[in-house]
Image (cartoon, rainbow over all chains, first blue to last red; front, side, top):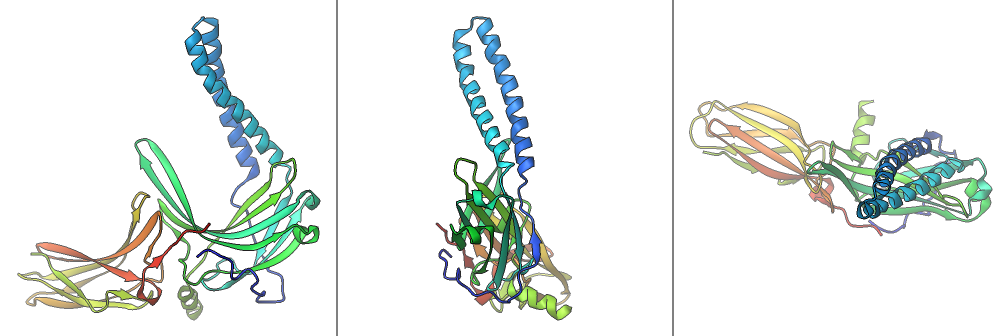
Length: 221
Length: 115
C-alpha cells in the first residue's frame, strides 16, 4: 500500500476541480480548547504550589513543582496555537466528494493569505485505521496509517500559492468505514513549512466508496 | 442440537448472492438466518446486522437460503481493526455461526503499513 506510483497520474479533465471541502480541524477551536485547559490546569496547580510554599511543606512544594513545569509547557503550547491562528489558509477543491477505490481524484489548492511565508508544501493522501477503546475510565484512540501516497511536494512559490495534483486511490484498499469505535479514514494531509513560525497543518477528510457501490448508485439514478 | 450451515461459496464478491443450506436434527417450524459484520481487534467491538431471512421448516430437516452480500464494508484485516462477516442460523433448540468473506476477488483485504 505504500509508495507513490500514482503521484504523476494525469488529471482526468481539463477543468479545475470544483467541489470545495473543509478542513476537519478548526484552528480557533484548537486554540480555545488548549487555552482553556491551560488556564484550568495552571489555576489548580499554582494554588496547590503556593499553598505548599506558604505552609512550609517543602517536599510537597517540590512535588507540585513538577506539575507547575507541565503548566509552563502548556502555556508555551497555547502560544504556539495562538500564532498558528495567523497562518495562511488553504482552499482545497476536489473533483469528487466521494471518489471510488481505483479512481482518480483531482485536486486544486489555493493559499488564502500570505503564501510567500510558506517555504515548502507537502500534500499526501493517507488511509488510516482508528480504533477507540475503553480501559477502566479512560477512552483511548489508536491510529495506524496503512496507505500514504504523495500528491505534491514543492518549494516553488507559484506552485505553493496555486497548484493542482492528482492521485489514484489504491484499488486494492478498503473504502471509508465509520462505526462507533472503529473507522477507516481517508484524508488529504497538507503541511506547509513556515520558517520561525508554527507550520501550516490541515487535514481534509474524503469519503471513499467501493467501485461497485458507485456503479449501483448510478444504475438506480 | 445445533444446526449446520453449508455455504455454496465460503467467499463472495460484494453485491453477490450468498447461498447455502441449513440442516438440523429434530423438529423446528422455522429457520432464522442472519448476516452481520463485526469488528475485531484493538477497538471496542462494533457490529451490525446486514440481512436476515426466516424460512418455513416444518416437516423437513434442511432448507436452502439466499441473502445478498452488501457492497461495504469489505472483509479486511488491519493492524488495529478487522471486519469479519458472520452468518448465523437459528432453529428451535440451537443456533450456529459461520464466517464468510465478502470482498473483491473473494479474498479478505489485508492492510499493510505505510511509512
